[in-house]
Length: 392
Image (cartoon, rainbow, N blue to C red; front, side, top):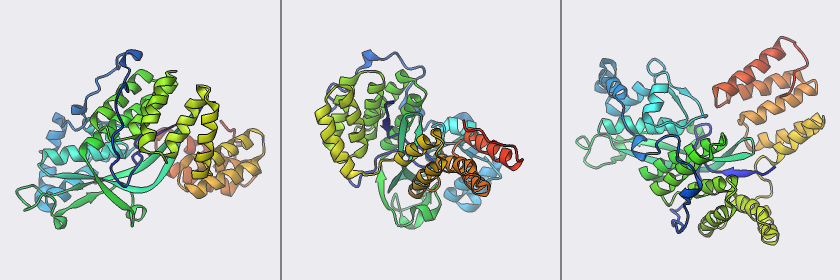
């Protein structure tokens, strides 16, 4: 089985990106795009749609309740309460899809990038200046079949109207909206990013989501537009390379990865993908050398213990499986899939109480309604003393 590592943008309130302490130099874009290899996208790919405010959004801003809150609490706090109070929009977090501002408002659900975009669209409609920040924290990882996703995090800060503040971002008048608990980002370094980078993240997310459901033509056009919007956002190049590889355009994949590798020579994600492409092309000597370097930089690859645990589950060695899943949880305690399979391993070992504990954690930290429902059903089955629980 071939594996790819993708850097899209949203997992548990995180935006999948390779955060850098400094702004990297953009790779050369020579011969990067190959439009003739792909069919036209199934829907328009337009940057103007990302922050577009719909008629329904304008109506909501002009409603009596929203206007009252902003009058009583100020524009910033009033807008925040209007959007995120449980008594009003009742937004639901869902990591499955990245939506633009209007789509998020209509659906009343979205991942964290979607929520940042919607918040920014409302703020700009009100004349409030906005600033985006990336939080330089350890990546979280998730997967979809043989795709692995690395995630970072961004937030948004609202300033006062230009007529209300002497400077655009008076520190005493700022309101930062973050979709992670304060303790998760306390002490982390932050870096301001441009709005064009947010747009590139959005496009890159859409590319990754299309890639995950095998819509390679759509994925290509989203990744292409992400690079066009911000040619310094390197994860988009990585995503484009993965698309080329899945589309069996190996020389194009290698070319794209080498462009990024010139700018990020220590990127383990780029190395991982380049190794795979080199193997596909029969360049085994170079691949072996690069693999040795990767092992030094990253002795324990993401999901390595998880994959060993899954192999042990298939072999019926539930004790070893439990040990491997426990290793992954030590790295990422709240990733729902690790908790779920640890619960299943415990159940197979007859440790029902532990199984209930880990399946409950998996359900509480699920990032989509479908996963939540699966975990809830497993819990109900165990609690009803129906056995044995079949592993899907």
